[in-house]
Image 1: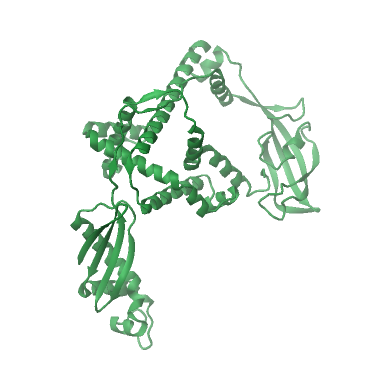
Image 2: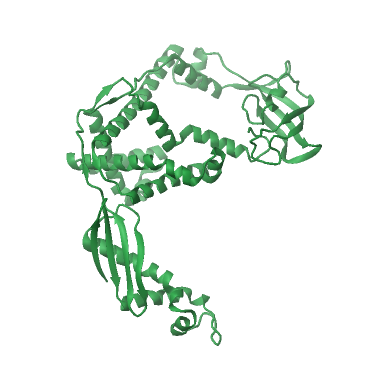
Length: 467
């Protein structure tokens, strides 16, 4: 195997690799052995056709795809080592010549790590949101704790109210005929959850336990099941029972039930401290993001398009995995959102570019400041991760032994980000572009809005959904 490398514009290099016929014939033979059971030639038992007969009967090209697979990867790795090049993108392959008598010639284009010319990275001024704890936040946290210890009681002395949970049997009819997905028995429905189509839950308010009723409703025009979209239907409903949550009084007894404290005053003081700590951590994280964004703006980095495409692939994969965890496919969510995968990828271009530039800038700070991760720091990080994920330390350490380089890199990068923060200047003046930045972050993370939409898409597979 011989190889040459040519530097191209925008931090791309091109390998030209030649595999002589003797070496390529080995790859052809490997492809032949891999596929031998597929070949069927008159006069020979299937799986026993000799190589020359296969080539003569089918043509050598029938082996090329697998032969390329056997030949290219080891040759490419050898060329990387020979020319001491670390790739920073997926390789793009082009076959120039291929023939059993002449060998294989191909090119591979790949990105190399872009050179980073850092802007001034000490003394950057960036927005840090105020770390505050409001009375509303305190109340919300206390209400969450109240809900955890609330008693569920059966209501017998009044009709259904918003916030109640009603256990119902129901069945939906269109033109007098029951439709698929419109039936349920013993279903617990919280009034106000907007789980069912508009009007369903409102129609139960004021009704009594044991009551049977007909709800005349219409499905939303944009309903996912086209045969029901915009159509009038009737739901026959029976209310089996009504339950509601009885919340405890907010007093010392409540505090003793949910915490290690004896008085409400002590609990509130501790809660305020915990919320303030979380608010400071969140403010620091946003400050760090803003510092990094400002540094990216003043740094010179020429990012190859292929790296951006690879990063978009990663973001799409992350999103797809997140969607699957929530029980739906990404394409299903995108359809619900009224967009396509191609449009989604286009929208991710700037997000992908910023992610790449941010990583490269952090790497450059690590290099410039000569940050290292000590064995003690790696050990402490492994212990922390084992405790966080609930693993025995020895088993976790054994599992993550191959990932020690990743852990070291993470520690170094964290040092770089901490360095930026400690040398940055915080301002509480929010920049005018902050709203645009928040929109971009929403697109990159999708976060709670995506989760809510995912829940709606998942619900829409049944008859008891919102639009």
